[in-house]
Length: 233
Image (cartoon, rainbow, N blue to C red; front, side):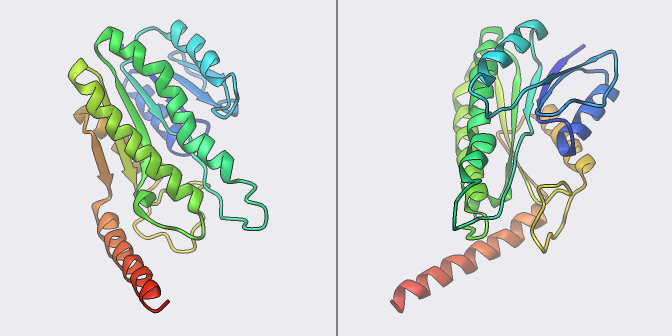
């Protein structure tokens, strides 16, 4: 049976994905900051924080015990509104959304390359193209993740390993804090899209497309406002 490693699966998209993979017959290892309520013979859970200094070394021990991975899905992510007085949460957003994914790839990708098979999927966001004064760390960390995953994908593909950048819109999780959340997906819908990526192995998958169209117009408006502000300065 295929083996999958899901990072960030105590709730939300990661939990829904873990459930779907187990239903499909996968052997799943989950990693999150919290314990898991899943009790299944083909499931193993480890409590790790992607921001901890020893995360990579402890994850390497988990991967060594798991053996060959068919897929690793990085679902960990946080988003916080900007507190301009302290910037208190900004560093942790980057550590979770971007650096945690890099640390995970550092452990998983070399093993996949040695086996000449495997698939690494990172959950970015369609917010990766926005300039967001309300949550600049979230948009910027996702922009960095998008760039990193797609560059990694081009480097790995000739050696038999696939990397996918999944750019989702709003998903109904504790991270969805915006007052307006058009075309919002359920965690199960998002997990099913990950399953689609596992089957088709694209470099980039943007979903839903109607959200992408809406954000294209929003970015166009942002560019126009910045141009006008500079022109009248």
